[in-house]
Amino acid sequence: MVGIRAQIAFLIKMPSPLYIKFRSLNSIPYFYDTGTNEIFSLNEVGYAIIDDIGVLSDEEVIKKHSDLSAEEIKASLHDLREIQKDGIFQEHFSRTASQAKGVVYRNGIYNISDFLASHHLSLILEVTEQCNLRCVYCPYGDFYVSSRKHGGQSMSWETAKQAVDQFVQQAVEFSAKFPDNEYTISFYGGEALIETNLIREIVAYVKQKALETSLVFKFGITTNGTLLTDEIIHFLAENEFHVLISMDGPHNMHDRFRVFKSRDNDQEKKGSWEIVNRNANRFVELYPEYEFRGFAITITAYSNLSQLNDYLKEVMHSYPATQLNTLRRLSGHIKNQTHTCSRLCHCNKFNLLEQNITTENKETQEIIEQPDFLNYSNNFYDFFHKHIPEYLTGVANRSEEARKKFPLISLMVDNGIGFFHDRDVSEKPFPKTCVCPCLPGFSRIFCSVQGDYYPCERVDPDAAHRIGSIQCGVDSAAALNLIEQFRKMGDCGDCVAQRHCQNCFAMMYFPDDRSDENAWQGDYFQNECRRVIENMTNTLVYYTTIMETDSNALAILGQKNIGESTFDREGCKVSVFSVS
Image (cartoon, rainbow, N blue to C red):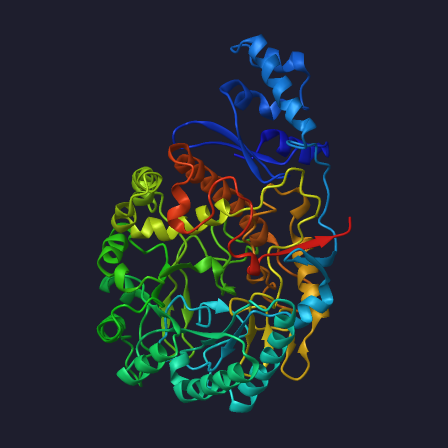
């Protein structure tokens, strides 16, 4: 839980350390210190009184906790004050995150405007807006307010070539400073394989550029799997594509929302599982050991986690790159023409109602019911909560059987635990104000069919998120403006999760009228801030539970050993700093 003291301090603007106190699943008490990014164990007395330090006098603390030994309370107060002398549990004065001024990358400091304009690791090409499916939860569908809809446009070769040329040129300049960088070009839609010929042409061109520049370029694609043929599968495998096939689980779960586009007057939309399953199996048959193949599984309130785990136990070995998606990561929000309340529901960013409403399908004029994709029932996570202790025990004992038995839980928690295990630990408090967890255009840049640039494929393709084009390149001023809007929407300078934030620009969007480019809606953003802290607290619980059994157990994830502070993935690590 976030310290009560921190909450009180926020209300009355008094200095307070930024920390999270929590217990492992073994009930051992700890606190996480934001300033140093370190975890410290507590005794039971320290855990009971930590929220009162600086809020109450010593006498008041002793009186409040009259059930505890006064001598033990005094000893705990002394211990906590002693570690403050070492820069731990430091007083923190309330502050607003300041304007970004620079970037720390691989121990170097760079002007943020120059960095944003010319440093990109991944290019995502929207090769087409067309799609042969009409997945009910798709952000480009009828339920969502978005400037992007299913359309008929595809990217021209000229647009693709110009985007690739800019990306390659910047990669050459970037690699002059950091020669070990690798670069990725991915293909996105719509359904990207509708434009297979264009993708072939782009890949051939990029491989030619790779020979000319001696740079390494990798390829990736997200596909609904319906158009996979032997010829396409061979092409993807021969070029070592990272292939994500959209598959939401067993037949009944997948076909509920992943359906084909209606034809003519046929109101019944056919599910896609049968053909996707057949094509995916064919991929496995042709390339059984292919390591870059995975499913992209979208979790909704209608998913059955137990059934999904059973399904993954059968297929996971053939799809090692599988990942989970949640709808809250998608851009846009649910249309709402009947509900007058402008505030968001607590559970999601899509302005989902507490009950189903209806809307009109523009293609068929049919009236369809809107599912509440994120209205999770109280027992939705029962499977997870029931089995997470057994899973963590297995990981702590370095047992691969735990991941084989609970592949879904592995997908849900391993990345978070591994990322936290890889964290930087400071001997002194972190001196910089956290501005945002993402640099628009750095780790990825999304090029639309029209040739406009956006931070990634998740954001709405509108003027406020646009950060350049193939005509003018990346507009660092526009990217900086996004960072500024992000900074103003949250209390980053006062957040306990500022060093592990997962919020992104896709969580910033307009009100329905979109009349003012700076009129960002912040309700959902603030809700997501609370969700980030909750998720981080859960990660701390799971992480310490494992480490209590074996401090080196996470080596099985390919992470560093406990006590080290360097990143294996240092090349992707960027810190933004500001001047207060």
